[in-house]
Amino acid sequence: MTTSRRDEIAAGLETVRSRIAAACADAGRGPDEVRLVVVTKFFPASDVRILADLGVTDVGENRHQEAQAKAAECADLGLTWHFIGGLQSNKAAAVAAYADVVESVDRAKLVSGLDRGAQARDHAVDVLLQVSLDPPGREGRSGVDPDGLAALGAAVAQAGMLRLRGLMAVAPLGEDPASAFARLAGIRRDFLADHPDATWLSAGMSGDLEHAVRAGATHVRIGSAVLGSRPQVQ
Ligand SMILES: *Cc1c(COP(=O)(O)O)cnc(C)c1O
Image (cartoon, rainbow, N blue to C red; front, side, top):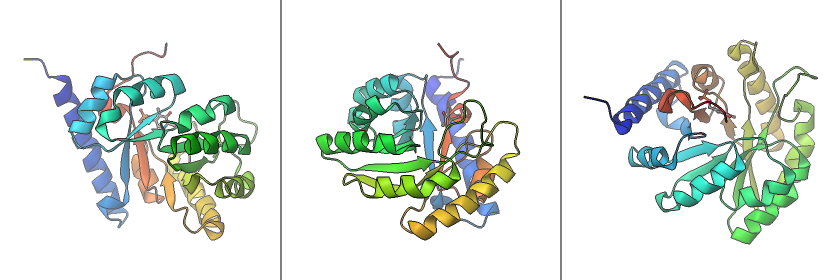
């Protein structure tokens, strides 16, 4: 008998939920302190439906067109949609029309478009600033440099329809995630001094969620460990 897609996803979800619970226990944190965002990029809307049925509340997408279509197709599910990908400023308003959380804000140029999109929808958008943990000058790095966070945070904080919630980061390739996330915890501590309400920290993926939870992550973004390996990038 072949395993159904639902059984497959349920098994992945079970494994990831217990990994999160174990990591929280190890770190002396409550299991409810970490929210699971399942990254559904490249997977069909039918998988999103299964996830919602299995109790997932938050999903993440990284490409605007795919995210927009899937969010529309799944509008009846009441999910919280996180946009976690690189964002063009001319698409910012369109992203704010369906995303509840935009995790990848890395420059002030995105702020007016996001604010406009949120206003048009009459729905405040939660914003995380994506901070780069890469060495300066690294090819293809994304995120704002830690020393640019204060200015970017101020720009988001003054936008009427955006709520500055915290920070997001990806562990750099070629560095031990434990040391990268320890550095992130320090950056976050400094940031919280200026923005005490911006307590969210989105860090940790399928391969490194335990390190992220230890470093204080409040959100983990998990794709392949729940849904399996992604279809080849088109
Ligand atoms: C794809 C993606 C993830 C999920 O990665 P997995 O290794 O499949 O868990 C997390 N964060 C971002 C920013 C991503 O683009």
